[in-house]
Length: 510
Image (cartoon, rainbow, N blue to C red; front, side):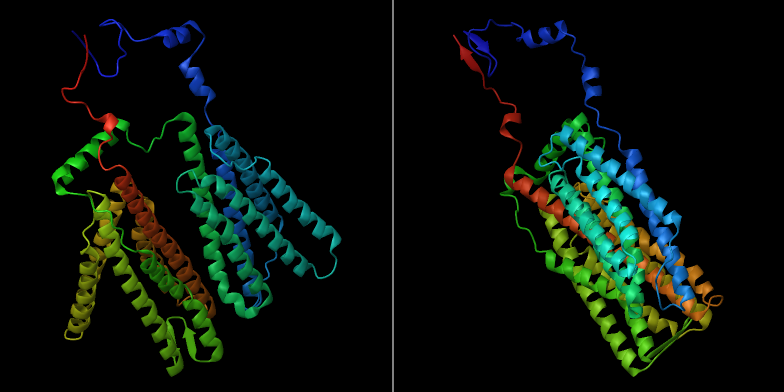
């Protein structure tokens, strides 16, 4: 009786080598693995990506500077920027780099085998249509040119949104980059509407800081969308992902996680706690905070509030309104934040071995509230120097508790394979805000009151918009990582059968 390995066809002599006809035919031909790998390399797109984002950033800075000059010339009431040839060159660089990237990106996606790939001629046709329509408006329209160019801008933004939606459809099967293309398409529409309103309506000038924040956000999202697209195409074409672990490491990690849970522990938990509503509550609170400069301007115009540098005077009406807004924003942020933090931690515990404790955020919140109340009570019982020391100690405790909780969630997101970058930005942006606040306070005495008010409003909107975008992106990616790992656990409840080594099982052939 002859023992045969599992799966080997009967009738083959023992010890005979495997069939090498394919390998021999490849060796006999001119097959060269290195040459085949070189032929599959993607088209280089880094230069086009840098041109597109660099040109877009230049456009934002040039238009922002011209708008600021127009506001100063009109005593901060009218925003009609007087643009020169620099804006045209920057726009040409951004459009040319963007079109070049779109062409190369579409070709790389087709090489990578993605489905529903957008045609590589779509972007050049859109750019040609946008530029041609500008020349047509400039040559044919003689009266009421401002409204004509406003209509042209609306058409340009709609074409841009349409092109972004086409690339988003292709990116939907290439990881988590389709959300970036959605923002690339809709952020210009939002900023363009507010900018046009600010040109025609003096009361809409308060929306310009939001336009600035949206414009800078658009630059970041554009680069992330293009970089993610290029990374996914490169991985699919070459078969190499520099960020990923090797297959052996991933398999070993899966086996260790399964062993740590224990086969005798029963069925794995598959519940997923609701997180959409608390996440929306946090976003609503942040958007309410973004509207604070608009409320301040409105109350000033109605005579209920006076701002002179750092001196702020409010009457009863303004005090009640700001108190209601502050309480609503704080309550929505606190309730939604704690609700989301607990639910997300439970979801992570259901799907990953490494998870933040569900009580981390509530304990951090209790520590923060207790610290504020303690500092408020103790600071009034001592002299000024001792009170300053108490306030500094309380501030240090608040910062330590805040960063400890965020770092725990960042570590969990990284362990689950989620995005850790948004959590890093959430941690760093408050530090940046503290650093920026110092020179702004010193500028209060050297700048005119209305200039300082504009600087303060712009800084508030920019930093809070960046924080809002980062925090929402961090929570959304965390939930997506939990849901993805949960589905993987439901579908694959252990080590796949075909990877398990059979124990003492052999086929026999007599």
